[in-house]
Image 1: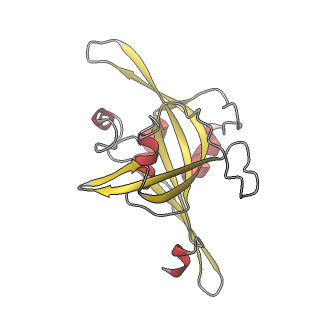
Image 2: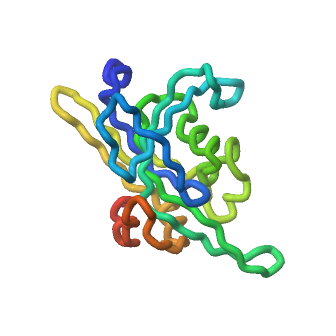
Image 3: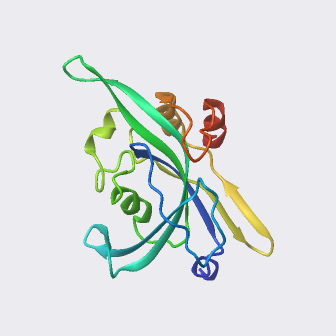
Length: 185
């Protein structure tokens, strides 16, 4: 708990979010410069019945976000029409650890997590069986540094298999499909 409270635990998540991530929030001036492809999400979150919400007076919540790829899911409508939906695969490191932190931070910016029935859209279950939020890596110190990486579960890898990789992102080179598979495995 001490390591978590002193920000010595690294928790990284792979997240599939709605729409293409285009936001840019300033890196705190008290820190060294962030790479161009890292976004800082600084919010105040307040716990409420059944969840959490972004407020001006809640507990400080910080996440670091790196877009990995812009993706498109092709779908057929119920009337036979074809359509598509755009998504961004994100690597998110939470600095603090608030309840539903990632979900609230993304949804409040118009990019809810795929499969999030509370803060997002209910229609995702037609192509994604559950919340697309996966703890990818956990690192801490236990006498010496320990890092545990968990591959993306098969059901979530299957969701990515149904996506088309879009053009490279502005601030960062989008990884090739094989690189996405390497990150996910």
